[in-house]
Length: 189
Image (tube, rainbow, N blue to C red; front, side):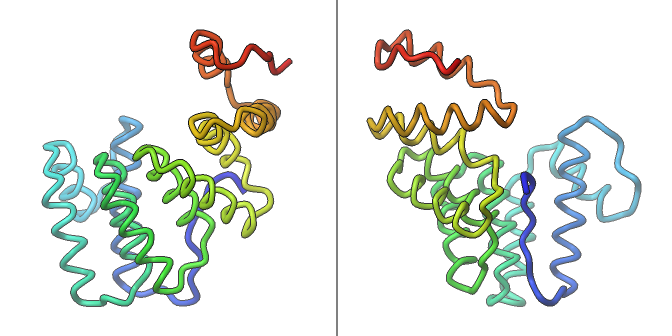
């Protein structure tokens, strides 16, 4: 499974609302026109105007209505991540996990946010948990390889980068960086 989606037993109206927001954000991010609908149009305008506070405020309002919904915290984490507020992204993913989310995407996304913050041990732990839950999680190897590299574990970094390359990831840019830094001179091929 290379694309993650949280798995929850029941779907509530807030979950549907958040999914519409995510779809609207995706449509915007690929420069396509939304399929219509007042909600998508509203959030499209907010996102185009970069009114990040409005997006987070809307999610916070929904969280206030249902504070034990892990889906809300997952999506709030995603938005914080998109807005490069990585510390808050980690907090929200952690809250989703504490509320019972066992989705590999929560751990993967938290791992990526931790990687961005320089929390390499925690990032590696989150990526490992992702693979524990979903052994077919191909997206994990490249960021985990980077985390291993920045943590100084070059052998594991190379192993993960090899695996990522076997799944079609272009790791040449990162390998060029490694060569320039004179940290390692091993080629993957």
